[in-house]
Image (cartoon, rainbow, N blue to C red):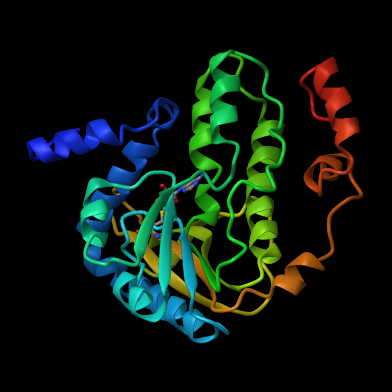
Length: 306
Ligand SMILES: C[S@@+](CC[C@H](N)C(=O)[O-])C[C@H]1O[C@@H](n2cnc3c(N)ncnc32)[C@H](O)[C@@H]1O
């Protein structure tokens, strides 16, 4: 990390990065995202403009304009901070960490607050389990991990598919790392839990998330990979392409694109009333946790899938 001035150094000492987040690569990930966003600024522009427009459309749909909460604000590429600050009495930008430049950028908006929070509520637990070399259990849900109930608008800003990445990468690097079924079940649970949480909120919810990653040779799609671990989002909303990494940014031969879904008003009821899986042994674990005892027994006997 480089420090531009004594003041930056003092600020770093005042807000050190928690050790477990540094070890799990969150700070590095944010800096890489920031650099890629700058390098690919032109390619990202249509996606950034669509995302910002959708968030403002979501703001238009709010019954009241007291508080907006943005989850996954990151380096703020796709967040219309100035407009949100004009429209809402209070704006809270939430990320697991905030970059120094983000702290400086928001200082000019007196009603914009930064909050560092792990919106899964399980990151520290995964770190501790992996550190102790313990076989990993699926961390319990934390229903009160983040208070968003009083917001008129909650925006989930391109974070949904990212939630499992750092914990899984960290856990799988360790000795006694988790089995593939754990990775699959854990990742899927974080995605479902985030959507359940959004759907439980009273205010309007704007959701923007990648659905698929495409590897493209010109206009030909040579490979596509789902981003949401088999979770289907409700019908509706908008779809667009995000030129995430034109070659050779991530691959020397292929352009990498994301198919993005955006909802100015996430259909909370449709999500909550969806048909849940539940007929297979794998699904027992993946549904809503009510069958947890079956899973727990299997976990203690051995580490094979229940
Ligand atoms: C793809 S980026 C979002 C980019 C951002 N919306 C922008 O346009 O600049 C995903 C963000 O999610 C954050 N993130 C990942 N896991 C998180 C967690 N468990 N809790 C809170 N934030 C998390 C990352 O730090 C990153 O900033």
